[in-house]
Image 1 (spheres, helix red, strand yellow):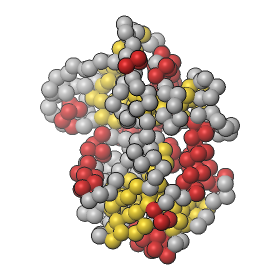
Image 2 (cartoon, helix red, strand yellow):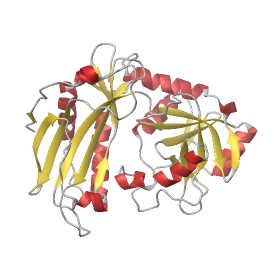
Image 3 (cartoon, helix red, strand yellow):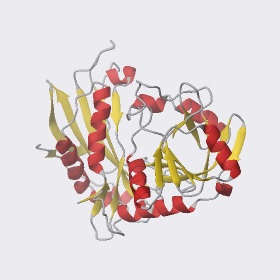
Image 4 (cartoon, one colour):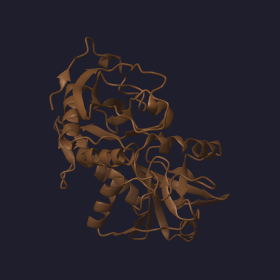
Length: 353
């Protein structure tokens, strides 16, 4: 793939306070853009970060034919930039594309676009501990048409943002409230892909939870509302003694990259890993009788987010005395050290540039 590069005339890098980063509100100097038209992806280019201009009839604004990925790059101790498991993201965006009738990308083109852009803006990767460069690839339909139909044109873009922690709590436990009458996903739906509409429909239940003092929603299944699925922004895992339990990949939850990494490491450490349906009643009982020792969310944005309290139908239970568990600390440190190049990457998860 031939990528045309137009560099910015003036970098904004000196305007950034890297000691006081938020999440996703500052963007690097450049962005990658490629268009799909006439039956093929074409015109790959890197241009200065800028606003877009489009018609009010843009089909994505009305029918949400849009998907995205999220990954991170880290400043390694050897001076290189590590991207954590980008090939998995390259493959996963095509899973989402297929479900929404979006033309798939060649994984090699995805990787070339990613590495070229990141190399150009490599000075934007934060060097402070606990910080990283968040990378957002996304595709959206660009036909200008008000009928419900598959678009014939699309735009693939990558933008990047230097970030600090997603949750201000960091490794301090957060609280969750179950989803009650609301449903995030169902069998045959789009729960397993990263589609914009999935997140839009989660906002109202999440707002209700936050209004009651909880950080996020813990989604239950759509049929019986009794089996744990995932959190609004993360997969969720439960430690019962030496058994690590998480929901199975049956079409309603995202196949998380961090989730997969944790399960791989847990098996190597001798834990029993179970991808099975888990009833919320088992969670509540385990929290109360002490057999449930830890609960934590896992995702690219937050990495590891311990859970100290869960509310279900007005009933609050506390996990591990609302303290961060030893497994959560260990897995967080292991993943962090791999990403930052502090320890050997035995799984070849990092791509270094």
